[in-house]
Every structure is written in structure tokens, then in C-alpha cells.
Image 1 (cartoon, rainbow, N blue to C red):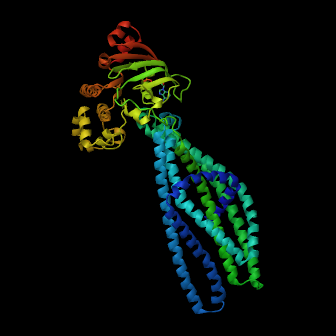
Image 2: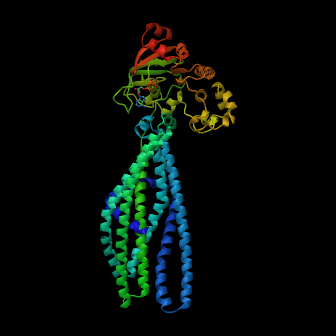
Image 3: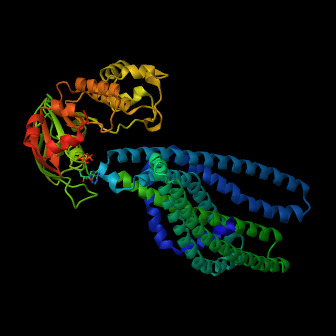
Length: 598
Ligand code: ATP
């Protein structure tokens, strides 16, 4: 282990300057450690004690060889062994304490960090998740925190221990024999320089291997997340083949790295071994010539072994520390990232009495990931409190984009979106979103109970509220038929509920939210007649006197709407009631024939 490690020392020493910069992100962890001063202090005490107990051993060895063995002094030898057992006990206890406190700190810091990073992630705008690879964001949260945990729990602990030992052992080497110490130090460049050259190559190779493995994992995760799409397309063999090829590439890269590393080990071992033999040979000459006692040589050799071991240990963990620094850097970025959509410092209050009015005034908007086309262009309309307005248009016309802008998931490039007379950019985000309830087409359910799924976002809702909401949403009947009623767990992504049932859960959520504005994205997929009737009934009850903006896919909906907005390529092309628009014979009348199921 130490031999490999020495190779690494060299590799890392080569990048001394770069490493110093690279380790800097670890400083971001300082405030997290500073919260636990008692544990940090205990760690330092345990470390010092353990190092002292280790460093005292060679002294005992020398005295024993010189005074005990050489002098044939039985009682002396006995006493020394007893003292050594006591020292061993101190070493054992101090090491155990160090292990405990450092691991504790690792776990604690990582838990705090993961919580803060996740909080920051939840505040980011949807645009952020579109530009970032969402899989990568998840891996930052899990892989990077794990890396930091292991870095603090082992690397940090080892680094401190080895640093203290190395310094102590070096001092003791000089105290024992300055001449031999100078020789040892003189040897170091001879060993290190060839290793530095070799080490660089190893480092480059290991980066290639890591990169190819990361892309293979991302590809695999994406496909498993879309398992239905994959299987329905019969893409399993293709996907497996691609994953396997990516793995082979990673393996090949790893192979090159391993060969380089093996070579490095051989070189390092030989150089180090030869060096040690040479020093011993000189030392033995001194003992034979009477310039040094056997015990002193033994003591020197032990200190040298400690120093080398500590150096090896250090180099080993430097690599890990550098990785952890990378992890800390990535997490640090997330931690301090200011969301591009956030509440202004002095938000404008909404009128106390919520009206539920929506105004778009010359709004033009492009998605950050598609800046070349406007999803919405020069769009103006006003939706009066209590009005039910249907939005109709071909696919990609910008219907869902309107919802995104009302919720301020994005900011328009031009124009203003107002809710209850307040520009959404000037309002508090929480307050704005509390004014609208969204019933999406694809209902996201979480792997939790039905009750918790309904409560989602309304933490203060009690059981009675949840049941009432379910009743309003026509969901009571099917929920009661589930094995554990409201306490039934919904499978991952809600696969155990039908489309109509999922929608009713979403409606129940919206009921609990009790917002003045309802944003409703009607399901395009046909439900069975009974389910359909229930969903409709539930929706009508929910709409009540609320302002409702509905992306309409049903004839019944457009017929009942107070007004219909017809969108095409982000522009408002027609506006009116169903019969008027049909009579006009424009885009709407064409769409109506094609789009609306009865
Ligand atoms: P559909 O009925 O198919 O859902 P829609 O009328 O709701 O369509 P929008 O989803 O508002 O249309 O999309 C308007 C335009 O913006 C489309 O051209 C679409 O491809 C694009 N678009 C939508 N969402 C994004 C996004 N997150 N990033 C980039 N472009 C997007």
C-alpha cells in the first residue's frame, strides 16, 4: 500500500501549485465544521495523543536493545514491556476516539451540506434543470456528498494523523542521527523525480477512465428512468449494446491506467527499497565502527519507517482529498447559485382580497434552451376574475407556456404578466404561486400514501381536510376501495393508479390549495366514460367561482367556456365563444373538427 502511495505522492507533488488551488474548495466546508467545535477539538486532542504514543515507541526500542538486551537486565526488560503495553493502550484509545470524532464530523457535515444543497436546488428555476443535465444534478447531490463524507471520514482523518506523524518522525530522525537523516533527505529527489514523470501519465489516464464511466452511467440511468419507452420501442438490445460498449471503453481506459500504475509501483518499490538498503548499510557500518549503538540504529530505522509510512499515507489521501475538493467545488457552486427566478428584495404585496385576475400585456417569450424561436409573441389578453377561459391551439402553439408564465417559472423577454394587477416579477414568488392551483395533464405522484399525495404542498392540512378534498374531487369512492384507503402507498410514480384516478388526486390537491386561480391542463388521453364523468363533475365543482384558465381538449369544456383564446405559433389568432368561432370558419373551426372528443 505504502509503495503505491509513494508513487502517488510523486504524481501529486508534480502538480503542487495546481493542487493547492484544487484543494481550496474544501475551505467551503470550514463553516460546516466550525459548527461543531467540541468534536473538532476532541479530534485534535485524540490525534496528538495517538501521534505521541506512536513516536515514543522507537525510544523504548532503543533503550531496550542497548540497556536491556545488551546488559542482560531482566527486570529492566520487564518494566519496559509493561510501559509499552500502557502506551499501546493510549494509542488504541486515542485512535478509536479519533476515528469516532472524525467519522461523526464527516456524517454530520455531509448531512448539513446535502440539506443546504437540496434547498438551493429546489429554489432553482425550471430553466436551470433544462440546461443542466438533471441526472448530473442528482449525482452531485448523492455522489459528491458521499465523496466528501469519505474524504472527511477517512482522508481528512488520515491526513491529520499522517501529517502529525510525519513531522514528529522527521524531527525524531534528526535527533537520532543527523547524518543519516541528511542522507535520507538527499535520496528523496532521486526517488521522486522519475515518479513525478510517470505519475502525470497515470493521472491523465485515470481522468479518461472516469469520464467514460460517467457518461455510460448517465446513459444507463436515462434509459432506466424511461423504462416503458425503452421496452415499448424494443430498444433493450440497442441500449444494452451501447452501455456495454461504453463500459468496454471505460475498461480499456482503466486498463491503460492500471498498467501505468503497475509500472509505477515497480519503479517506486525498487527505488525505495534500494534507498533503504543503502542507508541501512551505511548505518550498519557506523554500528560496527562503534560510532553508533545498535539501539540508535534501530530507533532511526523505526522513525524512518514511520515517516515513510506517513508520507505514503498522505499521498494516498491527497488523491482522495483532491477528488473531494472537486466534489466540494461542484456542490459549492450549487450552494451559492442564485436562482434566476427569485422574489425581488421588496416584493409588492397583492391586494388583500384575491380577485384572480390575469393580464398578459405584449408578452414575448423564448425558452432559454431554444432562444431562436419565440414560444409566445406579442401576446395580450385579460382574464377577468371568475371567468373561465379555454385556450385552444395546435400542438406547440404556446398553450402550456402561458401557464409557465403565470406561475413565473420563466420571465418573458418583453411585456408584462400581471396577476391581480401586480407584475409577477415584482411579487413574492410564494405569494404569487399560492394564488394559482395547477392541475396538470401528467399528474406527478410520489412514492407515499394517498393522503400524503393529496396533502402535497399543503402541510397544514389535517386528515379531515384531506378527506373533504377527496370527496370534492370524486376520489373518495376509489380511495376507499384501495387496500388501506388513504394510507395506501402509491407505487413509484403512481403506476398503480389509473389516469382518471391520478387526475382526481390532482384535483383534490387543487381543492386543498384553495387558490383563486385554477390552471387546468385537460388530459388528452381518453378516459373511460364513468371516470370521465367523475373527473368532469369534480372539475366543475373545483372551478366554481374561481378564475379558470384551461388548456382545452374536450368539446364540453370549450362549449361551457366564457371565452376561447385561439393560439397559433405563439400568437393570439382568434378570440370568442364557441358558436361565434365556429361560424367564423377560421383556425378554430378547423381545429374543433379534428381536436375535440365529445
Ligand atoms: P402541446 O399542446 O403540444 O402541449 P403547447 O401549445 O402547450 O403544445 P408549449 O408547450 O407552450 O405548446 O410550447 C410552445 C413552444 O415552445 C413549442 O415550440 C415547444 O417546442 C417549445 N417549448 C416548450 N417547452 C419548452 C422548453 N422547456 N424548452 C424549450 N422549448 C420549449
